[in-house]
Image (cartoon, rainbow, N blue to C red):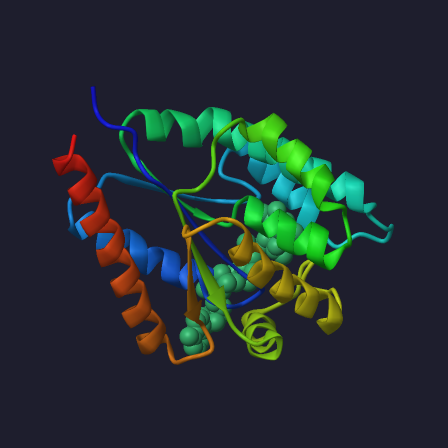
Length: 217
Ligand code: T5A
């Protein structure tokens, strides 16, 4: 039986470079012989992608914070059952563009949802599943939003205020204080080449720890 795989998540505010850098990290791991599945939240499954479309479409009616929260966790439940858990059980690594840290940052930090509510949903939907490592790409809000705007039309959440995104950024930074050593923070305001030096160091650290833990079995 193969050992359970690693669950790695990439987080950060709008336009910090998650998609760009997810591809870079996937390549680094694959080049080192890791079987890896990349995915994203909200999304990752057919049902999850439908929920993503519902969540991000610009609407002419307000979306209640609890409605948004429950849709996110509905997509997550499907994602875990259909994709994440089977892949990890099969010994594959899973690299996800966002996971529950985004909920703490956006819904708690940004929208003001009580953390205790999210903790309850996290326990209900995830059981004991938590990421093994989380890479936080951190950049000033105006840097990320300029990149996002240059890329094209803004979705429903991207149309929030700068104050909202500042709370999201602080929400992420607060998260890194809460859960031990699983976080690595990279300054994503730097040129891409420097961000990717940080990613390479992160990837090599994870690979070295993994090899060591296998040797100790
Ligand atoms: N959400 C999600 C919640 O509210 N709660 C939750 O629980 C979850 C899971 C999802 C939305 O859902 C919300 C958060 C989001 O609003 P998304 O697509 O995952 O949407 O998130 P976005 O932040 O919208 O993703 P983006 O695709 O906009 O941004 P990325 O992936 O961070 O950035 P990327 O790689 O597309 O890069 C943006 C541009 O910047 C350039 C890239 O080439 C690209 O053009 N770039 C750089 N340029 C210069 N220097 C660098 N270092 C650069 N890095 C990237």
